[in-house]
Image 1: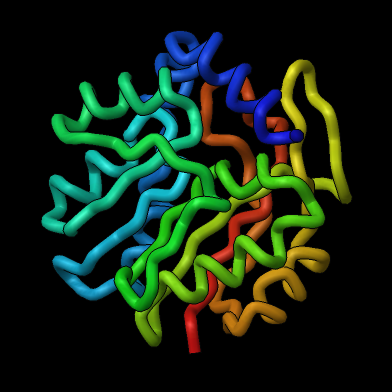
Image 2 (image 1 turned 120 degrees about the vertical axis):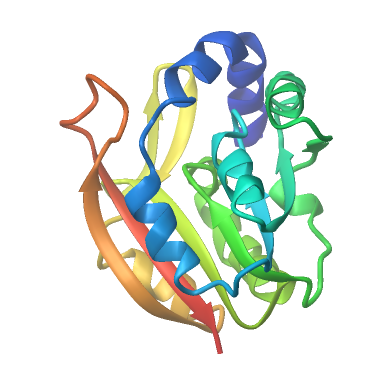
Length: 196
């Protein structure tokens, strides 16, 4: 299964991944996302990695639930944010009308291409009406293998049906660069959608 290879990678490289992503400046994208989430609203940090964004949301007064598929990342993120991070996969989500926002920063990109439509529908179910989801993907088309990991890549055009077919309205669809030092030449698709 595609995700197992990815989970194994993050379990083995949790320390270096934590260090490499904890200081990435996501403030502009977070602010754009939060403009669609009510103050103090409930946010699901789906595939939270280091817990970097969970911590910022919590400090800003949001009610945050965090999960990650990698057990080792969960341990580090739990320690960092000072509360439990659930060890869970997207496939295991069973939330219904619970969240005002879902933050899926560089996490949905590890879901197998053919499973993504079903997972995006689960995100839709997890949100309250007018709830917003943020998702980011590496720029490209289709399934790509980079080192030990497998990615589902999208362009600003190909990402549209993925979310629209699940019942979302796209409110922001921007191609940006990587916010990690030394990775500025990597392109990402950043999408914000609202549940109608």
